[in-house]
Length: 271
Image (spheres, one colour):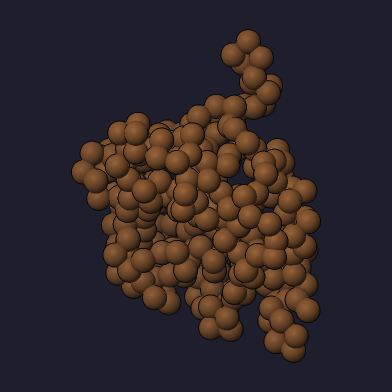
């Protein structure tokens, strides 16, 4: 039997495996598997896991993919991870350094193939709220960071969602403020709104990986050792399929070795 602490702590890959990993390490590996060799990807400003996932994918199966940080740094190689994707030290070893103008110009040329979004709220259709919650008379009781370029949610070929916490406060039936468009009302509503890109294709959390093949979140796989009742209790909308669900393949020894030795030698993801 595998074991895991669902929000913090470590997990063990399986009986006798001797492999343990943190929730962030698991999320990074699962996300890296979603990245393709021909991808041009942009991460958010405070996103450590997506940056690590891209760097891991480059090392394992996607050497030709291009990563651009929100600061304009292209394919950084600093030898360690930094908590903010806007940290100036990412410049070390980078292939190039662009500007905000260069980054925003991607909104028009259709070259951006994958974008990563977390959120104050994520709803069942993959819509993202980064603005605030508890709205009364148009004003939130909690204000989020907002978003500099919401057009990326429309022009990116596909979107990978993620959240460091899996709670009912984050995973809601409907976002209170639509910051970045997911599948809107579900079904073909994204296409009917004139958006031609795929939108969110998955959402990775410390508990599960959600798929959004039909424009609504359903459990693609549950992470090793997680109790299905925990997922149900911590999700603020009804899940369309009932357990048992497929189990996420845990990190392999090779994936963890490259992650820890090359991508994250200082252990930021293990903390």
